[in-house]
Length: 335
Image (cartoon, rainbow, N blue to C red; front, side, top):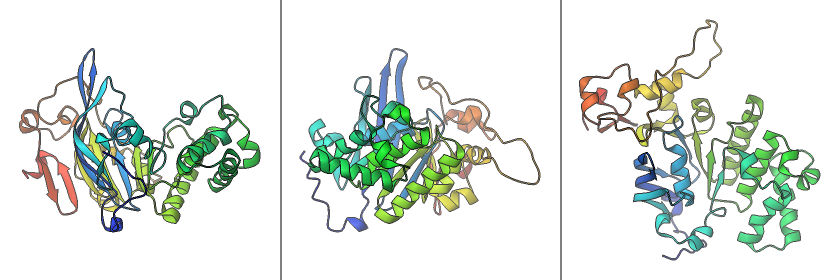
């Protein structure tokens, strides 16, 4: 299948820019097969800020790697489903065709910039590299544009930082370099995989403000992957909650914070620190995310759920639609 990055539907503003349909991703390990993603479906509209939240092992980061075509094979494998970008199924593209999209039309900010940046190349040259590759710029022109991008993302003394190596920068500055790299080709979709995890709260707020500003000014869609509902509150229009590779709840952000339905969602929101007159212990979700190779009958959350019944132990619950909510839980009846 050939992909022309210059051709997009004339009415793209009325259609989803990205559609994930019934995506399933497995990893084949010595301990057994891990079903990392199990029937994931969602859409991302132009300019939308979509949040995907869940603990480590929920499958949220694997979903972003699948979009980017970065699932290592072996041991990983996209078993079934589609990932449609402007109607083109990314799972059917060759590596050469995917390279036209990755880093150009769809960019990604990774969780840990220190391991994502090349330690032997200057920060400026790393930003310029994608401009040479995707935009055909000469090196001098690309370096000039890299300087402008470093200024745009708020890097202090950008002329100096251009010539420095990643280890010479603070965590916040390295993350800003990653953002500049992601923005170099003005992508239509910016995937942010835990972009603030390694940063202190002050720098975290600055990075989230920067992402929000870029979304508003450039109109690009944002896919925010995080375990932190506090980050989701700051940045997302709509929210998907994942657990053991499945979507357990989805709703607009204001709706889900006002009235979370799934016990897992309630636990995640309840664990957000709050400044109140009455100081008490933070809520916590008992237990741990199950071993990914462990076979659990029924709802995979029942071993940690305070409301679990015999029905929960026997059968996987259906997805129920309640107004603007979708929730996968037996407490809300059958679909």
